[in-house]
Length: 169
Image (cartoon, rainbow, N blue to C red):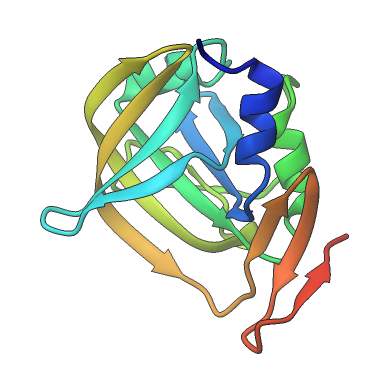
């Protein structure tokens, strides 16, 4: 018998993880995005990654339409953006600077809040329970000299090169 949803979330909230925002353009060329911590490398040759998208996500139609997205691994100072993109607001990009991706069909690139980002083209969607797993080819990457934002048990922290954690925010 499967565990309850609350226990499942407690399990996966028990280990620190990076925080990411996934962005895409919808069929009206409007920017869409959501906060994601279900992100992993799949293959180095060819370069593939996967992201998990809730079937109820307001960004899912944009991913289906465009077949491309940008994954932003968040840096120190991006807690507010993480919280906004985790919500259901239709105005997640209000007042936020972004540029269109050159390789991910114009998907928004949020350079101001990223530790790194990957411009991706969908290779294969896989249905899995209440989510879709999007396996995507990484077509472009940019990395910045910033400290990463981490998430653990509903709290944000900043990791330092000396291995010390500090509370974000």
